[in-house]
Amino acid sequence: MKCSVFTDEYELIQSIKNLSLKSPGIVSIDGIDGVGKSTLACKISEDLSLPRIEIDTFIQEQQGGYIEHIDYYRLNEKIKQTIIAGHVIILEGICIQQVLKRLSLNSNTKIYVKVINVIGNHYLWMDQMQFFPPGKSADEMIAERMAKRYSLGHVEDIIRYHYTFKPHENADYIFERRKA
Image 1 (cartoon, one colour):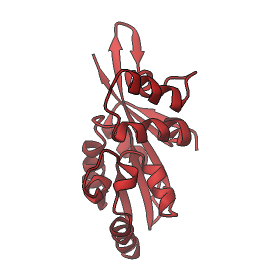
Image 2 (cartoon, rainbow, N blue to C red):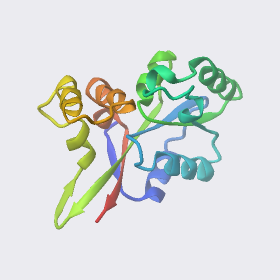
Image 3 (cartoon, rainbow, N blue to C red):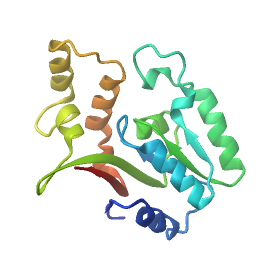
């Protein structure tokens, strides 16, 4: 499937609805912190009457990271219970394809959410420039952040994930939240 870009939630939901979602299955909603993944997941879940699982609810005591602090056993059990019931699941969180890979699962439909800043006639994806700009490696970006004494925490996971999994390039749907 060719990646489709949407700026309207209703149009995105209609497109997903028209897929004839196969049960059981996983619709994953990915993106960095604060882009509106949970908001979109709630809307899709509500409009299509599908169960929603938020990966953040499976984070063990936060120790400065993300991927290594997920309770994969509990998350896997919750996903299995929902799949056994024959449902399509809305699964949302950061680094979602990496999480699914650890669980030996795949997403049937991948949605990537990003915030686009509109400046005049220009559309800028500022998160890409801040975390994973073209022409730089993950190690370079992490070294730059460390040199500036920025806190890494889960940001290191996000940076490495985007360089490795390229979720923004491999999504079936991109949902852009545009900000003036």
